[in-house]
Every structure is written in C-alpha cells, then in structure tokens.
Image 1 (cartoon, rainbow, N blue to C red):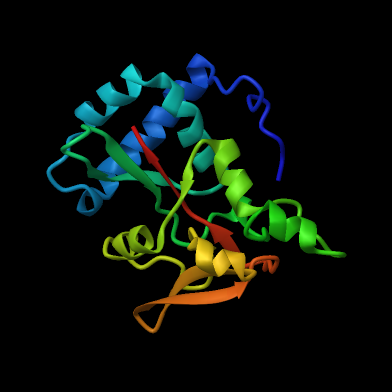
Image 2 (image 1 turned 90 degrees about the vertical axis):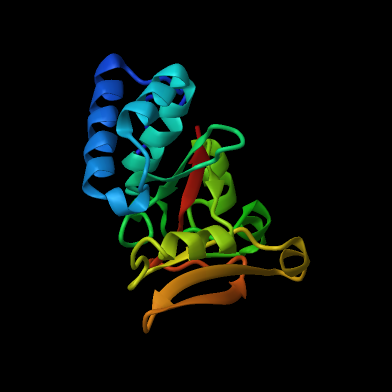
Amino acid sequence: MTANPNSSNKELSPEQREGLLKILSARFEKNMNRHQGLEWANVQAKLEANTEKLWPLHEMERTGGEPDVIGHDNKTGEYIFYDCSAESPKGRRSVCYDREALESRKEHKPKNNAVEMAAAMGIELLTEEQYRELQQLGSFDLKTSSWVITPASIRKLGGAIFCDRRYDTVFVYHNGAESYYAARGFRGSLRI
C-alpha cells in the first residue's frame, strides 16, 4: 500500500475535500436503501462543520472502503459511516489482528495489523453486531472476510474473530490473531 502524502498533517487540500464530498454525495444518492429518511444536505452540513472527520473518510476511501452513511444517532446527532465496499477493502487486506499478534510471528510477518491501521486512520473496527447490521443493507464479503473487534476473553487466549457472508448467511469464525490472508481485511466505522 502506498503511503498517503497527507498522513502526517491529516488535513485535506481544498481539491481533495471537494473530490471526496462529490464521491460521498454520489454514493449516498445511489444507495438510498442504506439511509432511508436521511438527506445529503444535512450530512454535508455536518461534514463541513467537522472538517477534521474528512481525513478519516478520505483514508477509508483511499484504501478501498467506499464509506457511506448507514444511520443517524438521534441522541448524539451523529451520522454513522461504515465501509460499504462489496468485499473487504483492498488496501487493508493481508493484515493480522493486532500489534501483539504481529510481534508474535517469527517469520513471514504481514506489513501491518488491523487494530493499529484502524487507529491510524481515525476509525473503529466494526463489532460483530455492527457487521451484522451492515449485512442487513446488502450482501458484503461474499469472497473475502473481515476482522471484527474481538472480545478480550478470546484475545487473551490468542484468538481473534472475523466475519463473512456465504450461502446467504453471516458467519462468525475464529483464527489465531497472528494469522493473515490475502482475502481478509477489516471494515471500519466513523461517527460524525
């Protein structure tokens, strides 16, 4: 994966900002089933009032996540974005679960891990519940799989969990946290 030239200052140029908003607006309008009852003008106003959140959205887009609004939290007023790419984002695959798992590998180490990548991007890994919520909006990960937040009790024993969709069913699996595969990445969420 190529380095993002803006990763140090985490600020988008006016051209990048405008381009990102166009992409997000077009995706929003194309996929109204994901956010029924919501209007893009309100989402855009929220984004323009919270420009520091544009960089994480840009990172989600840059790594192949195709972020889109999947809901609105009436209590906080926040819009909720998830990675909505058909398959686990290409720029976030072949990663183990976390730093501890990465360091435990003696050879053939992956280049990164899901937990730290998400943190560096300013997003959260999806939980199992959020992953299942996403699958209500379409069919995702029919060929790939995605790490999800692993309960501490499982992680303490060396495992991590991931999800995918096969046979029109969402499956939750386990693996050693140090494992990584070309078809496994992670999906994230961002609240704005």
